[in-house]
Image (tube, rainbow over all chains, first blue to last red; front, top):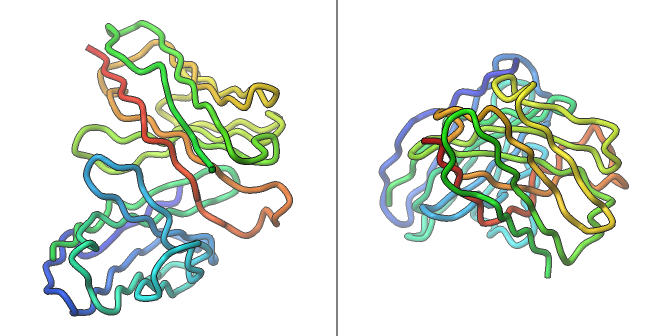
Length: 106
Length: 124
């Protein structure tokens, strides 16, 4: 089973600052990694797929990078509405796993 | 408008069964893999099950294998999760989510791009 770890667990930043979130896989997942944003009481929202591709309607301040085992989600200039928990997810054939999440406070 | 809507959640005693439904609209349901994901109170996301567009492939998270069954009715645009022998640690919000369009390559991970609002299951 592929295990995803995320760091930091919590991030506290001010509006306009840059946020850098990390996701590490226990073995290579190639580019099969996605990022989601979740706000309280809402389902997750897909931000990034295939490690670096923004999903439809996602603002350009969100970007993804990395491959194999090390991935990064960057929010270039934080907006107040970016306060949320961010999860990474990998797919290995038909099996998915999620990371534990990074909570971003603005 | 692309929509997923779960139903069938509720409160059930341990050992009992429950069936969740996910009604789909706004896209060609029969062309997509579908996924169930759950979230225990105050916890992260946990993948539960995946079903291929034609039901030929069904895969489960280890803790629900042999207790949960995922099915679909493409004619009725509906996904199901049959949950048996429920345990208190199955308590969670259960989300259905849209997976891969079968016309796209299997080796590229497009993510789960549409989610329902979730159905709450409490085992107590």
